[in-house]
Image (cartoon, rainbow, N blue to C red):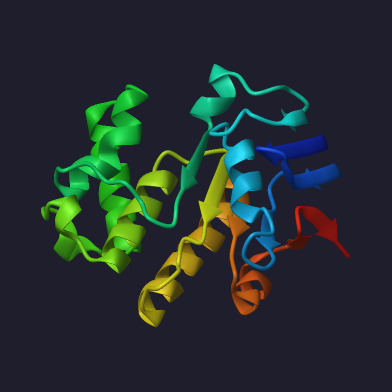
Length: 210
């Protein structure tokens, strides 16, 4: 899914926090958004995710404005993920159940992604009792299991152990390569952006830098 931003302005009260004339994030690529704190990275991601509509300008998805069909094909993973107070398995299967997938296919896909993320030992644990790193892995697994056309990631590997980061980065790249889904990732980590991303956008004071 290609994402195009045109004449985008976002104010908080009277302060202009985003000012982007023209920006395209290419279909099927991993695009990184980097920049200092307060540069507008998460604000831009929330606008693209449809979580913030208090802006001027347009955001298009494959040349369409956001609608229910596009919402169903996209998802966002936040820095502090919200998980249901149920088992890890139940959390991961949720996007498939709401899309009315057949039970046998749900089981196959959930089992597969649990194995890929190396979280078999968490399968029957209550998700709200997990550690921060465990929660972030489960949240990403839940996002990937239904193979979105647009995956939005807001600092998905912040403050977690190196081994978990390695697993999550591997699965983000594998998702992109296998499904050709578009990925937009906000990160403070320049090395991570170089490892993962085809394109990198630098934001500073709400503007795209070069």
